[in-house]
Image (cartoon, rainbow, N blue to C red; front, side, top):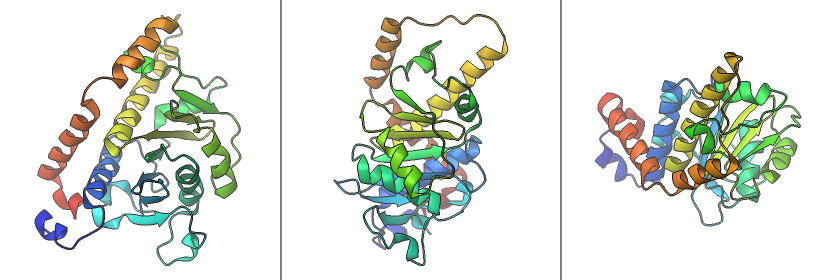
Amino acid sequence: MPVTQLKQTNLPFYEERVDLACAFRWTARLNMHEAVANHFSLAVNDEGSKFLMNPNQVHFSRIKASDLLLIDANDPQTMSGPNAPDPTAWGLHGAVHRNCAHARCVMHVHSIHATVLASLADSTLPPIDQNTAIFFRRHVVDGHYGGLAFEEEGERCSQLLADPKVKVMIMGNHGVMVIGDSVADTFNRLYYFERACETYIKALWTGRPLRKLSDEIAEKAALEQEDYPGQAERHLAELKAILDEQEPVYRN
């Protein structure tokens, strides 16, 4: 279906759906997903309580704009509907959108290097290069894994993201959750966090001492990245341009 024809159907939040569908497909291309078990969501109202999310157990590489569910975090009947989301997605993402209005977009994956970090006794990410410095004092570690993220576990995890400065939650023995202001902002952060984890894990493999940045330089680098103009938006725009050429069905 041509993009123009789809727009005429008045699909709600069409551009937001396209951005999110792009993020799903690129996450699969980068092998940062896990089967059909991970979830992304995007708030679409001012309060943050209504959000788009992937349908239950559909592979990231197949998700289209029209597939995304529109969910209300305050609707207790959500799980009884015919298009109910995955229960763990509802428990985790519903709680975050209900309790953290600043978390406009939420991405949760079990990407390999982030999950390795989440499995270490000390799961903090030290600033050893430019990418790891981006997350200096901007991530939190949840060291109290309590099983699958149903509603009780989701409520507990959401409390760890109450500080708007904290953009990444390393979910101990589980994976990672990244939040942001938009799909572009959040996907860019997710991408760089996985790259940062890969650098750190591979540096540990060498068994040699690490050259850690000072707190002052790490904070300086993190602030400079936050103020860097337009990078996240350009990153997503380029990914959409590639998909437009190679698999435009994601826009349908």
